[in-house]
Image (cartoon, rainbow, N blue to C red; front, side, top):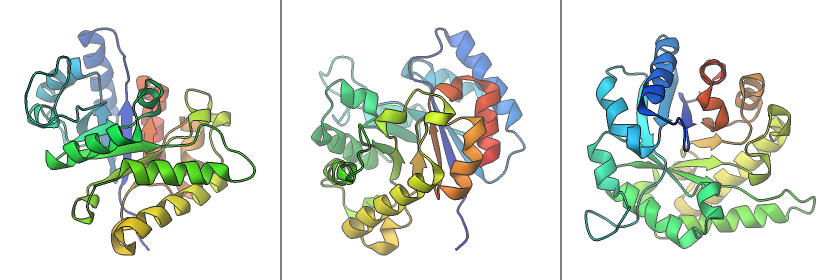
Length: 254
């Protein structure tokens, strides 16, 4: 079966510290991937910079996303929140939902599922993050992964599932160097497992088409092997997305 175009998502988290730095980082990345084909890049900057970067870019290789979204629809008395419709109107097409760092701050699977539904209802493509805290030899992590995935998609109908993206990010591998990432073989096994769960929920035709990304110590040195042998459809890139050289090498590896 022919592989689809890959998807590489840059999660800048709470970086950089000023808009001028964000513009410089973005323009350097955009310039270096201008001729890259077969890969869709999504940049998720801090929400403060999102509209400015959207306004300044006129290319086709990069789309924009947000790092989080409120589960409240529309507008209302929700201090500090940003609705999916607001993000859509300023140019976001994707949104990261349920990232392990947000879950560590107390975000539950139920909250994640409401955010996924809010994003889909507004026309955004949610990048749903799931992943075990540790990988035990008995395979208990698979039960955790199945529960997390199923609960986070509770109430999401098959009719909307085609716009989902799932990012597998094992917590034990996040924020480390390439040698700490999951091996291509184990990643391939996990991708098969995730697609099995999605197929069980939405049917094989829909479930097999949901893109699966990997996030967790992805760098230019291991992206090629993970992409070729891990059977993923792309990457969710954290710290390496702040380095122009590293991020561009990941994109080219896809």
